[in-house]
Length: 262
Image (cartoon, helix red, strand yellow):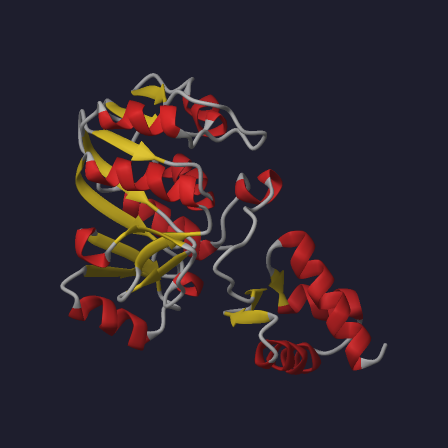
């Protein structure tokens, strides 16, 4: 297989799966890890992808489609599990928290406290379905039009949230930067999450290292409105420094120290 053919195969898999792992690519394409690394470098220079620790994700665009349900609602990476575990530790007895429909939100479910009562508000029927059997959690689903993905993010949902008060909003997004704040690819999702943040006493942003420095189409909230940022140990030091200079509290979690594996 020529380099161009191999790189086209890499991009095709990236489009289908949303991310690729270098080790898996080397095995499936029958080449060395160094060859895959050179391919990923070449594709990154052309803007087709962004290399991450152990693989790559699509090149950043301000507009992009959401992850497929199969990818969104699946077991997380070690970094995602570490972030999710740290985030769940912020939930106190009888708290009311917003947990959205993002991949990190789904990964967070297995880390939620089991020994005391609290309330979850969500815009995802998939997440609500997984929580309904938890006796220590009262689960509320926002009203509105249900999308095929199982999420709700319209004007009715926004109006529902405006009538609530939350202790914590666990926020995610497709991008996070010191200049643009937390952002996402679609305007209606941005408005919904912005509203959840506005009615919460505390906003905690969950973001993997590959999202730092990225800026998507629609801003959710500026960085000054985020109380805590949770990211993983592969986060670039320069991006962390920029965020801390805004006054944001940035907590870096290490999957290895947490005893987590991919």
